[in-house]
Length: 465
Image (cartoon, rainbow, N blue to C red):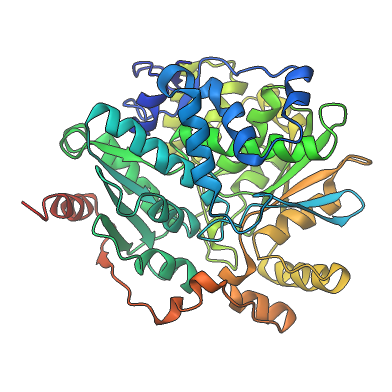
């Protein structure tokens, strides 16, 4: 399997190259040259497999010859061995045709563990083979940071620096990052929002001298390995609901567009996913685009669902590339114009083609609290402020007679204040995090300034010299 940049000016790479590079040298995002295809018989053969085994088989075409299949199987088994539910990603029926796909049974209680626990093993494997060391830099709106740190803490040949917007994550999310005791971890609280953090990461990659000096890599969903590792759970869920003989739909609380893109990738590979519902909070750039072809930047307003507090959804570029017929030059021009003007110009036929597959949905904070209370009252199910928006979208917009997989992306205990406000119950943290509020935090503060951030990363890299 070879990978190409959405902007067409970077060299093609194999899976290992994409894993270590993260962002393409031309500023684009890597995509497979073609999507692997699973026949009806192939999908049937995956039914009933334990999740780690299914994940290895779904990922094998993306990994190609870079990792032996036996090694990939072993890494998948190790990655998911510590999850707290035997099914890894259980489905819970909430309504006649609405099923919560619980993706929060990993160590940091969020769906990011599903990919990053495996990506950590992949990094270690490839780096050991190459005898290299990398420095990961990433931005987080809440959950990616803790999952990435958990995945690579104390691993040889890896340093990790995570940028988070100061004061704009939940306390649990922040503490899960800043209380990890590992010498290879640096947390930076940035004076800005998530988009600022994301722009700083992209700017570090665009600084070719700094990128080469630090041998940078990425764990954000700009890294295609993250997207690939999320595809298996949609395959798993669809099979459990009757695929390939039965169509399903998905509803995903969406910020950076990576999670729902993984579901769309499963569809491209042959899984009969009929429709994709993009669930947003007040930061609704994707919903506005799907409703009225309005991809304009409005800034970010903090909400009860901070992992969705994103003004620019980076992974949308990958979908755009596909719907523009994989025209890299047109994709590059569209993204450059968007960055300059703050508005994306998408031709009417392209927009209509996208909206045949995707529908937008939004909920305000007040509506989110009401949805948490309604769901708890009617089914006894406690959903966090992100998951509940996806569940509400599935209930309201799911195709008639089609089971809808609603991605439950975080454990309610990560957002205890919102849950308590909605239903009067304060969900406790699981045992392995019970003392989280008593742990000492370690992080540094920095301005929203590229030179200042690069100095922090460089100083951390040279701490032992």
